[in-house]
Image (cartoon, rainbow, N blue to C red):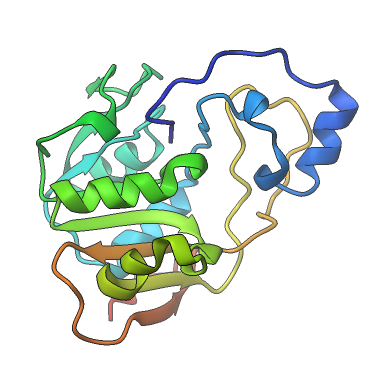
Length: 217
């Protein structure tokens, strides 16, 4: 995952301060440490999405970062157009592509883990370009008056984990490895067409099931 707009580098805070902030998860990380807001998506999150949500063969990942989501989708047989503003080394991707400035989508469905600081803008712009926008977001995204139009008109389904996701660490993190996130995440499925039914909120497991079962609703 990466930001659609680059952030100038600043020196990181002292190690003891970084550890204090990390104890309260990425939410506490100052922007100068987060830089381009790149936190790689755990593979289990994308595999869980594939078990519960039907996706077309062709998908756009506009904040591909090093390629965490891309690799899992491609391994499952999807054709993924991977782009990002910054070149993180994702295989078969295009860099220097500012998603928020794009006017034409290479696919009708978008799947990404957007930069936290640009989440609202990513959803809004995604709905201008694509029929379906699927994003990994904090469950608290359901709150907030400033995105009421997105939630009340375009949010179709929320897949929330029964467990917590593994902690998402930024590249180069050399602090303690936390096995579980301090906050709940979910896959949000938005549709360009206004919704005419209640939002469907369903629980799923982030863990790989025994026997490859799926939970599609």
